[in-house]
Structure formats: C-alpha cells, structure tokens
Amino acid sequence: MMDQLKQNKITSDLLSHIRLNYSFKLWMGFLLTTFAICLYAYATQLENGLIVTGLGDYVSWGMYISNFVFFVATSLIGMLISSVLILSGAKWAAPLARIAEIIALAFAAVAGLVIVSDMGRPERLINVFLYGRIQSPILWDVTVVTVYVLISTLLLYLPLIPDMKICYEKLDKTPKLLRNIYKMLSLNWVGSIEQQKIIKKSIFILSILIIPVALAIHTVTSWLFASTSRVGWDSSIFGPYFVSGAFVSGSAAVIIAMAVYRNSYNLKDYITDMHFDKMGKLLVLVSLVYLYFNLNEYMVPGYKMKKFDAMHLHDLFTGSHAFLFWSVQLFGLVIPIILLLFKKMRKPTPMVIIALFVIFGAWFKRYIIVIPTMEHPFLPIQNVPFSFKVYTPTLTESLITLAPIVLVLIIITSLSKLIPIIPVQETIEHYEEETK
Image (cartoon, rainbow, N blue to C red; front, side, top):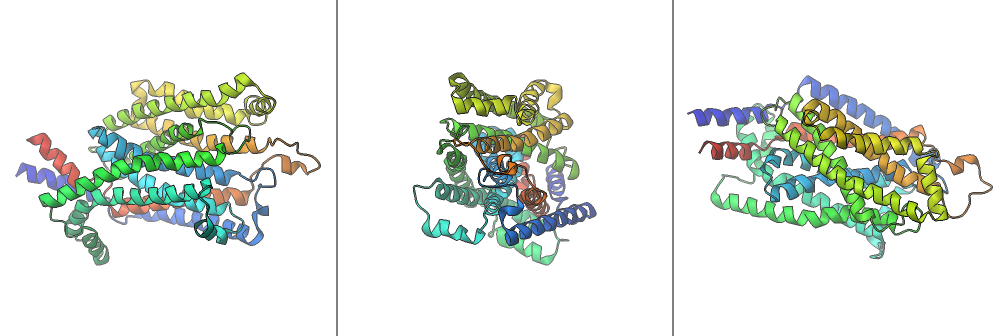
C-alpha cells in the first residue's frame, strides 16, 4: 500500500505542472507580444533589405552569425547529458536528460531560422538543397543540423512514450483533444518486456549516433570560419575549440532551466542540491577545457606576432574591443571557474547567477569571434564612410537578433506545459529499485 501511495505521489508531483495557470498565460503573452514586435522588425528588413542593419561591405557578418553560432553551440548540451553522461553510467543525470533534450531541440530547430535572418533574399535558401555542392561547408552545416534535430526529436520522444500513457490515464481533466494526442503518442504502450526492450535498445542506438553528429554540427560550423585565411579565424583548433565552448553555454542553460523548473513546478524533491552540485562540477570541467583552447587561440598567434595578427590582438587586448573582450574572459569564464571550485557556490541561487554570467559571456564571446576579425581585412579600408569601418548594430537588427531567442523560450515553455519535465515512469522504476 505504501509503495502505491508513493507512486501516486510521484505521478501527481511530476504531472501537476501540466495545466494552463495564470502565470503561464501572462508569460506566454509577454513572449508572443515581444515576438510580434521582432517579426515587425524582420518585415522591415525584408522590405528594405539589409541596409536597415549595421552590416556592410566589410563587416558582412554581425550579430546574426554570432547568434547562429551560439544557438548551434547551446544545442549540443542534449548530447552531453542525455548521451555521454547517461552512457557513462552517471545515473544522477537521468532527471536532467529531458530538460537537456528540450533545450537542445529548441535551439537546434531555431538555428536554421537564424541563418535566414542574415539573408537579404531568404527565398533563395531552397537553392542550398537544389544546387548545393559537396565542397561547400554550408551544405554540410545544413545537413548535420537537420540530422541533429531529427535525432534530438527521437531522443526526446522515445523515453516519453511510457509517460504519454500515464498522461492519458491520469490527466482526465485536460481537454479531450490533448488526451487523445497523449493516447496516440503512447503507441499502445502497455509496459510489456518486449516493448521495454525495444525502447531501451532504440534509445541506446540513438545515444551513440548523436555523439558524432553533435560533434560534426559544431565542427562544421567552425569550418565556416577556419576555412578562410582571415586573421583570427585561420586556425586548426577551431573544431575542438567550438565544441568545448558549446558544452559551456549548454551547461549554463541547463542550470538556469533546472532552477526555473525547480521553483516554478515545485520539483525540489526531484531536482535537488546534489544535481546543482554535480552540474557545477561539470561546468567547471568543460570551462577548464574551454579556457585551455582560449589560451591557444591567442597565445600561438601572439608568440608568432605577424603583422596582421598583431593588429588583431592589439584591438582585442587594448583597443576598441578590449572592454568587451576582458569582460567576457573574466566574468564569463575565469571568475565562474574560481567561484564554482567552492562547494558553497554550487548551491541553486549562486549557481543561477553564475550560469547567467556564463551564458551572456558565451553569446558575447561569439560576437568577439565574428566582429573584430571582419573589421580587420587584409586590404586597407580606404575612401569609404566611417560607418563602413566600424560595425554598429541598429535597433532593427537587435530586435531581429532577439526574435530567435524569444522563439526558443516559446518552444521550451510550451513543451514544458505539455509533457512531464522529469521522466515519470523512470522515476517510479528508480524508486522501486531503491526499495527492493
């Protein structure tokens, strides 16, 4: 009887947030209003062209491409938690796997739209599929992003099948249409041994497949930069450098989501201080790896000190981009590493503050990668207006850059209100194993 009561409590706790309360409506109203304003800004760009942005002949990549690299980076957290950690036997990460997959799917799915925002003629995107050349990293990028979105969708859906059956049976007060969707998505799940074997085997195969695809998605993105001879991008470390940076931003995003779900959905018994402590240690680990590649990025060209490398590094270290550069390095990487070495800082509240600094630092780090390099072409900039020499984003461009971020929040918020954030069936099975 006690076991049944405990199972009922777990089910009730993990399904209680699937309802349309006032705070959800208010938050979604804010997001949709903001998104509508951003869409109006994009309509202005679509009508008048990229002239409404700060982009030009010299700095042709701006916040849009910085945004794209950030989105692709953050999406890799699904692979790190739901694949690498779970396959390596880190059972503590199991309650966080679905959170990571929701974040990964949202960011990866929207990443393609970020590229569209950078196109003056977005209708020509179809030409990538019709006439794409295998020699082009852009075609590879489109391919691996699409495959990654597909695998991430399956990795989110397959473990959900048993929970869909639970939602259909327990959420009897939800609209009939939604209950029918739950029933359809449960695929006649009855929990038989054969069904469990199929699900576990499928998840295991996908967990292995997603690792090379995830590594490829950000490695190919890095090749878009490294395949040029521009100072600041002409480097052989950009592949692992981008991947390690992706784990940093993704881990920070998961920590923020953990805190929001924990407090908003009353999940303190399921997302505990132990999970924050483990995620804090994980963030330190990936940040140290990323710090190593940051040192490589600047130390090697600094040691050689070729003419154009010297100009680029001077601009970063002491020039017009120095304040942003040092702020990103210190507040987005070095100081978080130092703080998270102390156990007191690996508690929920300080962790969220640190994660916010890390994720903002991660975005501006992509800005630092893109903009200063484009402001220093090999050929001197002569006989052009001053605005051509220095990149300054416009309000329209900023709103369009904000649009994908808002869309990601809409997707994450919607999924969080339709499916259990913590796996219900898996949590019940874990409880039964502990009580044996």
